[in-house]
Amino acid sequence: MQAVIMAGGKGTRLAALTKGEIPKPMIMVAGKPLLLWQIERLKENGIGDIILVIGHLGHKIREYFGDGSRFQVHLQYIEEHEPLGTAGSFYYLKDFLQGSEFVLMAGDLLFDIDFGRMAAFHREKGACATLFAHPNGHPHDSDLLELDAEERVVRFDSKHNARDYWYDNCVNAGVFVLNASICDRVPAPRKLSLEGDILKEMIHEGQPVFAYRSPEYVKDIGTVERVEQALADIRRGFISGRCLKQKQKCIFLDRDGTINQHRGLVYREEDFVLEDRAVEAVRKINTSGYLGIVVTNQPVVARGLCQIEDVEMIHRKMATLLGREGVFLDDIFYCPHHPDKGYPEENPVYKVECECRKPKTGMLVRAAEKYHIDLSQSWMIGDTTMDIQTGINAGMRTALVLTGEGGRDGKYRGTPDLICGNVLDAVQKILEMEGKL
Image 1 (tube, rainbow, N blue to C red):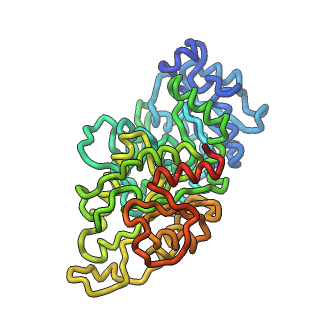
Image 2 (cartoon, rainbow, N blue to C red):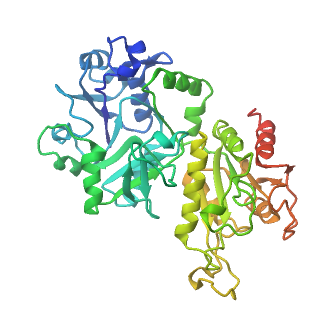
Image 3 (cartoon, helix red, strand yellow):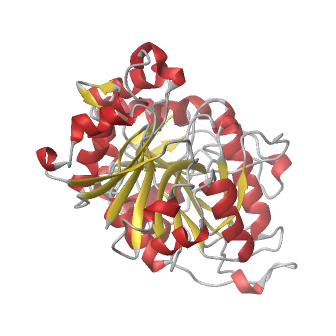
């Protein structure tokens, strides 16, 4: 597979670092150019044939990298004499591509991604375009993706939209796997936006455009403040630790009674209210190196109290409320089933025995497969003995919180490793035990 890096940005927000003398991708990050960080990560993934699309001060990039042999890669260049946006250069790119697919990224990103996983997802879905997507701490001013249940992109939600609705924290990160045939959509060199012109049209046509959701580190370091944050992340090993080539640790969280206030069966979005300490608990998880994933039984669907769409609306509300506070969950898994029949309005489609309903471990196993999680090094936090038994069944350590049910359900006899006042107390104790505080 080849890679294409859009390396023509001027970096006006980085003038204090570029001083008008170097192109943005050549800013120094921990002793070497950002572009070299990108090339090294690609090389680690077996991608050594790289095409650089250059423009402003592009000769500086050529002078430094040459043909790439000094860095054990093969570099080729496409030079834009006037800016062509993120897709206009595809007119020239088709003459450089050799395979059926390629990786594309912006030149101002610091990342560490397992591209093998992303490419496998692209092929399994039969996608013509796959966008790397992740949650971040500022979804309210980010370009978001709206997905269907199969992770197909159905809409681009621009950060300029007036968002008076609940939304998923699913941010377009600027890394793509694309089929080479996409270049045929650019019959002449003109300024085009990949998302706004090309991908939007493909979605409208019903073409298979998917989002690959991952917690891996991808950060636009287009400002001095973001460069400083990236340096801190490099020093503490956060960037490499997030790559899914490495085994991940996770703090799994129950939902009702743990993240949000216990109000019986919550099946209307207006009944969803965050627990007082939930935001700070999630914030600590976000900075710890652990993934934070919710796993929740939602029998409200099987009982006929609401539809799948209502559960997902509640989860969008949760993501929106957390995002407004600068925090995020890495994913949410839920079980809509319930095995017991006899409720007046029950939905027979979901009245089944399943492997995902806690205390079975199906949701945890799915999360572990998706994100390369070592369950034996992970934790389950919840307010019921069912949550504790789920963690025990999965070989994890467990923490019971005294909010919500507070263990009073009494269904199972498993003993938690920790008993804590609330979710923040639980997260703090876990991180203290693991030496993360």
